[in-house]
Image (cartoon, rainbow, N blue to C red; front, side):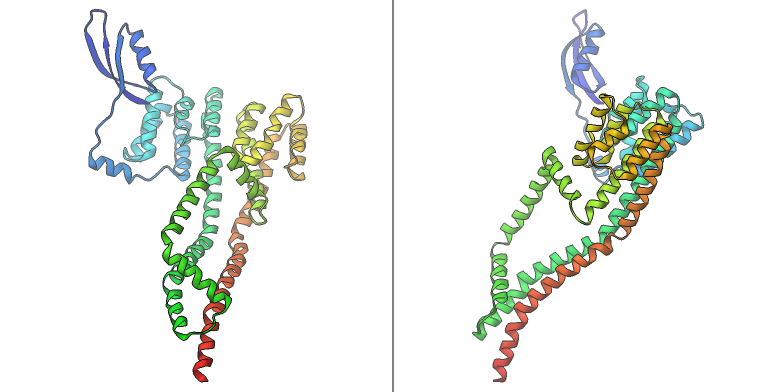
Length: 407
């Protein structure tokens, strides 16, 4: 919701001015006409911000998944205790403090609730904070009167997701640190160390090995054209980011990741865990199958898999069962297909999918915990190759120089 400054003329021809909150200017004009006013101008109000306010906004911590988990669990506790939604949001805003980003979002949500909108609609106005699954389940909870139960399930779902992401970040911390240290070492070698050795070798007038000539040539290029290399890396980073933002580019990248030997099985098992957990969540909440499958597919978070999974709701519309539809995609392991079949036949799809999610979440945890150990040999091979090239390029000519001195 934004604030708009309007000028309008009433039935007596007098000009009236004021402020009105709305999502767009056309809604302000419509509201003025409904009030028997003729709009003259409607402009978005630009509020002046002091340096202190600007600095406070700049240093505010972004909304993390842990914040969302805490918000969902606290909102569940308040609603479960019988507190009205509007009062619950007021209490949470006071708890977080007005300077936090989450409190700023909740203030807008509270304003929409005060205008008579349901909680799901108020949350949907902030898609960068609340994902479609969150909004849809809140909507179902409001319609069925089980909002507190849905919020409890959502908090558990988001908490498990947050723990998995934290494990993945921790597993990549060591390889990323090694890669950064290696890059810094290469810059120092090319800019400082190798040029010093090149001057030494040039004064000795010896025949240099091929490795040495390659290292010196690359070092000379780096010293002269370092700015071009830096610009190339920056341009490549922006190009790769634009590539990932394009739907086709993201699809190709996600398919490539699935085919990598280390990350492919991990991504597929994580997708199976998300599929099972989300399908369990929407089944318990009472979301219709077709609408639920849309939420399940979006929760997989892999464009290639999402594209293949879109065949499931199409097959369901043709009258096929969920088990047969999933089998036709060729993506699901036998365990998931068997659980889908048993769940459909026994009417216990939610419990079967819960067991599937539990199994694959444990497998993902095992693979994530051993991820650093599996990446470490690759890092060792890369570092060993670089050390060999440096040793062959620098120490071989030095040995020739020592032989010349002895002779």
